[in-house]
Structure formats: C-alpha cells, structure tokens
Image (cartoon, rainbow, N blue to C red; front, side):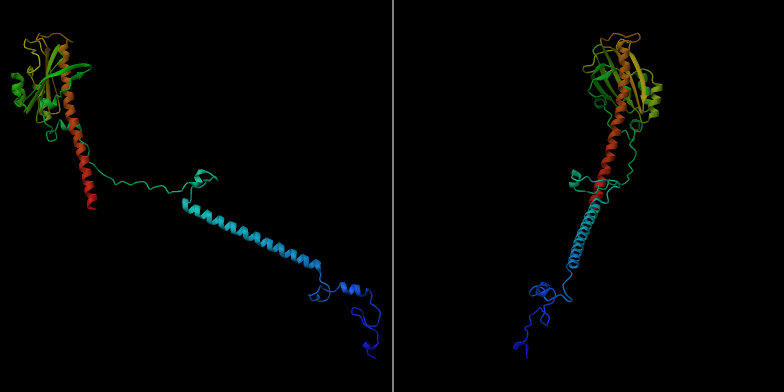
Length: 320
C-alpha cells in the first residue's frame, strides 16, 4: 500500500521510520539558511572566521590609503622644494627660511652682473710748471689786464688795490737803462706791469717773458737797475726822490721785478718799513700769478684730453 493511501505520514525534517530524530524539527529549522540564500556547503558557515577576514581586509585597505597619501605628500614636497631651489639658484649653504617671514613673500632675483670696463690709457696730465717753462705749451695770451686781475692783491692779510696796468713789447721802454739792456740781451719778448697801492705805499710789479727758462734765469742773475714805476691813471707818484725798495726773481720762463715806495713820494729807508713790505708782497703776488697761469693752462689741457676722448668714444658707438 502506498504511503499516501493510509501509510504513515512523513513530515519534512523527520527521518523516515515514524520517530522524530533527536533535536526534533526545531533544531533542523534553525540550521537552515535564510530565505533566498543557498545553503553553505558542508553545513553552517564559520562566522568568526569570516568576520576576521573582513577585518583584515579593512585594515589592508586602510594601510594602502595611508601609504598612498604619504607617498603623494612626499612627491608634492619634493616638487615644491625643487622649484624653490631652481628659482633661487641653489641658495647659500646653511641658509634657512622662516615660515611666515617677509622674505618668503619676496620675489627671489639673481644679482645683476657687475659692469665691465675696457682698459683705457690716457696720456699723462701735463704739470703746471711745464706750461710756464715750455713756450710750445705756454700759449695763453700774455697781457697785463688779464695777467694782473682786477681783484685786490692780498698777502698775509695786507690788501692792495690795483691802480694801473700797462703792456710793453719793448722791454727797454719799461725799465731803466741798465735793466732794459739786460732784458733785451736775453731775448725778452714782452713785459707786463701793474701798480698796487694801499694808500700809504705803492708798488709796481713788472713781469718779463722770455723764450726759455734758461734765458729768464740768466736775465735775473745779470739784472742791474730796476723796472720803471707805473704812475699813470689812479696810481700815485712815488720813488721820484729816491729811497725805493726793489726785488728781482725768476720762475719758469718769466723774470719778475718790483719797485715800491711811499705813496706821498717821500724817500723810504730802514728795515721793516711798509714800503719794503710792499716790495716783498709784490714779489709774492707776481710768483702766484705766474704759477696760476701754469695751473689754468694745465687744467684746460686736461679737460681737452677728456673731451677728445669722449668725442672719439661717441663716434665709435655711432659707427657701430
């Protein structure tokens, strides 16, 4: 007889034979997988092992993320550092940058190259003495009005006013006979005179020009007599009664002479008198004017050399 025709009924979850198995249907039902999921092969899954594996996977993933972030940070830092080094030219060894300082915000610039100059050779600047010694260089006009400036003659606090000036191409006409002959014999080419006075005394200065310094020195050594006093214009008459004080000297190609006396035309005598001092002051003033003549010409010569050099340099640039 078939089971469905009155035989014992079989209930799912029970073994055949009619007696329930130990544990009954309730235990069999709990071991079944949820609805819609296939049963685990070989029985129920090991949940502890699965949880451990999932935790390991999460830890590996977290470590990979941390490693990737660290690698990216190092790469970005290396690129930034390389850019700074390239921009600053490497920097000085041992230098440090302070975060947040003003230097960090300033633009780094390479120092400008130092200018280079070509070596130049200029001729030596002539010395003032060369111009008052060499006639080929001493080319400035020799005239009393410019040689003896209109400024007062001042020597050691003593002041004399210019009262008269005169030029003489014939040196004989501006000196007494003895001195005139000496000047002429040694080739005097011109004589400039000026008279200065302080009211009490008067002094005439005569400066004679010669072709060479040797001629001037010889004339000075041989000089006898005196230069003629210049009393024209506002100059007082003096030395007409004798008692005059005289000097003679030489520098370069110039010999110079002075004659001084009292402005009231009275004779002078003795040492340390105002007239004697005026003669010495005239001697010092003549020397200073001759030296100044050399300095002025030397300065102008140096300026001409510089102008010529600059003019030549400008021309080279235009041609290039």
